[in-house]
Length: 285
Image (tube, rainbow, N blue to C red; front, side, top):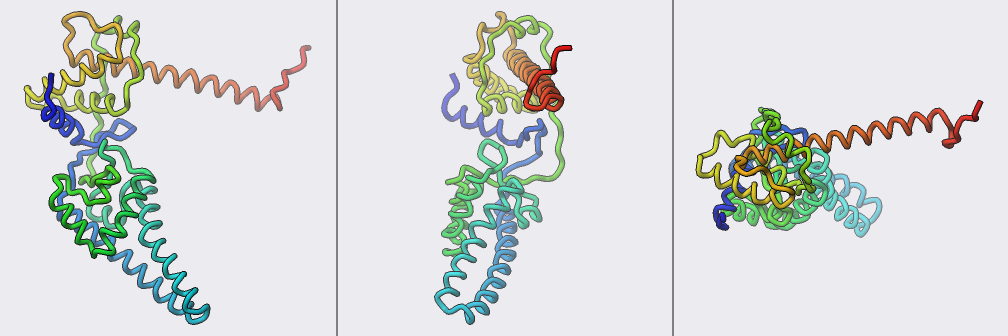
């Protein structure tokens, strides 16, 4: 059995890289404190310029609509700049604002996936207090003491910043071990949790670069987890890595076959509906 500390190290090692939905592993590591600081300063400069322009516009309009209406307009404008704009930008760009793009970093979820609206909104909302109201002091202190450079918004949203150096490399495609092909075709493979399948795929893609002891520990932990979703088990004497590869390849092939059948049915139904309005069958000659 692998202890809690080993499990933590295993999980951290398996999530060093970022695997996209297209099976591309981004060569990424947690961004350094200096890089995050640079990206944050660039974002603040851009948003600060936007706030200054809004204050000028609201000041001009406030003289015409009255002080109370002008104050309301200013509050709405500040909410847009501090919360709505950052949330929208990070959601649409999947974690890359202008400053982060210039610094070569990206915000991702703790599991390596792209940020979505919920994570972006939590980060922006928390940023009002830790960035704007405290002049960034809270974010600065938190980032310095956190081993992944997280600020409070990242901790609450479950995100962190990674350095994306731009180069991507495709993982070598998995192949079915010939000795397990017959077993895999008849095995009952349940739906694996996405995080577990991702961890196994990342492990197999970088197993050759791992220390032998770490490689064996990771493989044993993953084999035990995935084995809970497979029945019957593999033939006696099956190497654990071969078992993982066989399960992932069979899972991939089954999902591809199911998707192909669904697409074929959809195309056939679309053809019938296009040829026969309201799905009324052709009259029999």
